[in-house]
Image 1 (cartoon, rainbow, N blue to C red):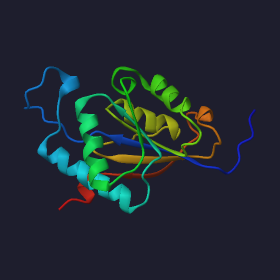
Image 2 (cartoon, rainbow, N blue to C red):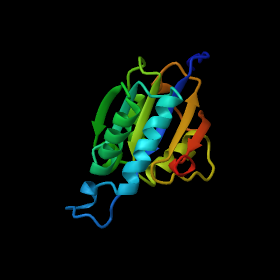
Image 3 (cartoon, rainbow, N blue to C red):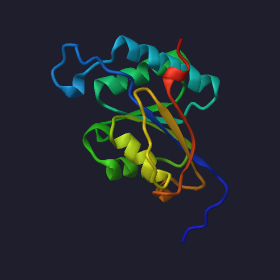
Image 4 (cartoon, rainbow, N blue to C red):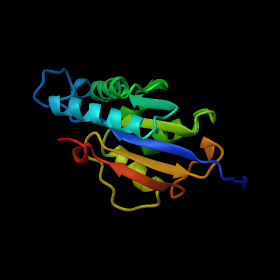
Length: 171
């Protein structure tokens, strides 16, 4: 078994902001954000910057509402980080998504996933060893791992550091 030291990796889980069900879109993949969703994305972008917890790498779903959430949060929070887009976060299951993280470079100590329900709550619950977790739209969770390499990421190894909802920070 690989020796694990005190270096920590962080995984940020960010559910896309509220989408506009009444908008004109081709299918679910192309559904845009609502006005409220755009405001929530702004709030969360600023919040992450002010807390100095912007990740090194962001992997976002290719779905329109996830990419819009990222674009608004990144601009409002002035995030400077590498961005990767992946259909896996929309089309694949939890294990495939976790493998995407495991395949990431170890030069990134902090990675954010921007995606969809119910997969994101399943990921959070699995990584912290169970429990009933709820991620409303535009919510973020941070999970800490005492691992050296992303490849060592395993269910039950994480500690939920925080879970934040934009409604707590909006007027």
